[in-house]
Image (cartoon, rainbow, N blue to C red; front, side, top):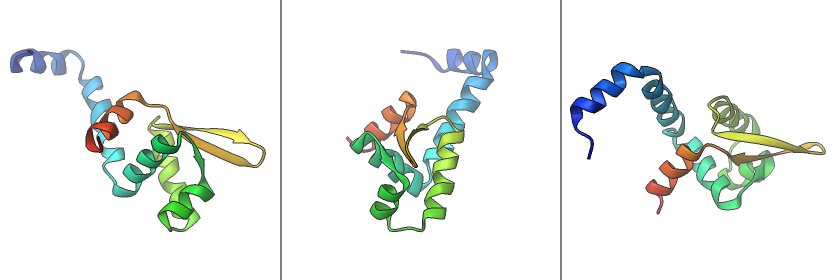
Length: 102
């Protein structure tokens, strides 16, 4: 078990690590983005149209959330013709969502 002093020393020695983890939590803390990540994990991949149908929201709204998830390195897109299929690539995000929805 790690004592609190060593946690503080870790923050002191590597604050960037804590900033990255906090940013990950901020990005997936939004209910729509959390739902997108959970859905992508269940399906392994989906395009914007499939996500839009599932969430019943405008495509522009879904695209904005996907852009935020992509910018944070949580998801990646794979182009197939004119469609882009998204999947979750961030292992920390996967572990967090699995812990929230066992």
